[in-house]
Image 1 (tube, helix red, strand yellow):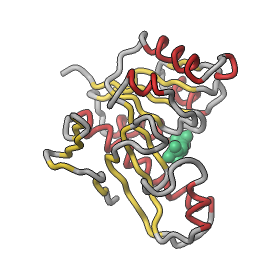
Image 2 (cartoon, rainbow, N blue to C red):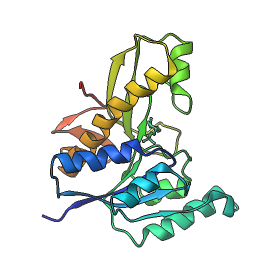
Image 3 (tube, rainbow, N blue to C red):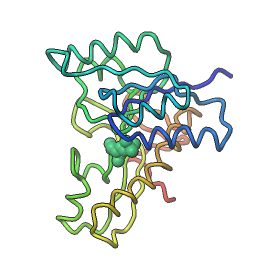
Image 4 (cartoon, protein in one colour):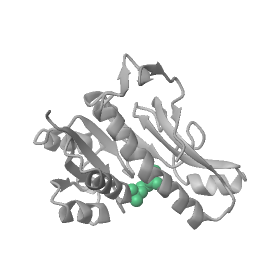
Length: 214
Ligand code: GRF
């Protein structure tokens, strides 16, 4: 069986890239490969992680382009050198142009640190604290041209006991490090399908995504 290949986009730390690498190692899974890592930030720790694990990578500096469209066009061009079945946004802190989303329609997933549709965008942990939310968590969704609005695939939540930024961040990361590898592997195994904008998981339709309890 030929391996399922993923491209990972990131902007910083890359702990979620690491979780994909580690899960693959732990499961000795040769059927899933990270074929390329891209970052808009050449100093991202995630790029160092890619290097250390012999994963091909490239970076482009958005400041060198006149528009979002031109930047994304250059990424599309570079991506032609790599083969991938799924593009994973794991801490990629840029909004994608419509053209980019269309080019890889229904092949891009994003990891978001909140229980969508609540709290799209930035500073989700701060908003949880501000609004004294009872639950927090992480969501993986397909990417459409809106901000964190695409079809929700899966999410995992926890009860907030401590309204503290560092501890919320840490708890969300813990969840993400399980949720993202799991969803990638379910997509790889064709257990998650997204056909004609209908999400099915093991044959059942989930219009609001599926909850995963870890
Ligand atoms: C994660 O919390 C993810 O949900 C958000 O950015 C963060 C990236 O973390 N989109 P890392 O770079 O993978 O450590």
